[in-house]
Image 1: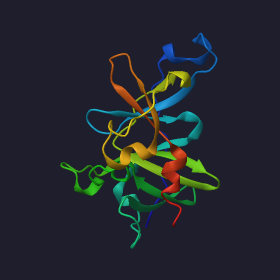
Image 2: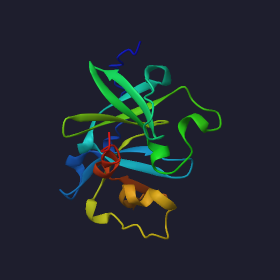
Image 3: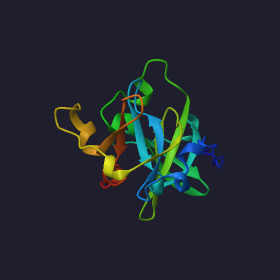
Length: 177
């Protein structure tokens, strides 16, 4: 039986990232999460409905769907799809990774009336970035499908790229369902 997991994980918010302290009113908040060992992703907080910890045993597999769809789970009485974000972006599937984990964090996004959980290893912090500082992605910059799911990227204070996920495009990958 699939059980609901209503526990939200507290997200660390650094006081230096508060919007009221910013010099420009254009800043937007994003949830930072690792895409892989070297690159971090960003999800606009405006697209986020919540973050929950999910055990793989809570996910009911669904036959004959795309491989990046791990299955469905019950969340607050609603059946939601759980999507392996790394597999969708072209990385190794969750169940085939070395040292596979039995749980992860699902970033819950809602498009129209459908909630979808984007499963990642962990979530990190909430950060603020000016959308005008977003850089465009060139086709030679990223492998295969990854670029098609991104809106661009920011560069953090250490010079590392922060890939901005396009939530609408990710959800469109579910449209045949």
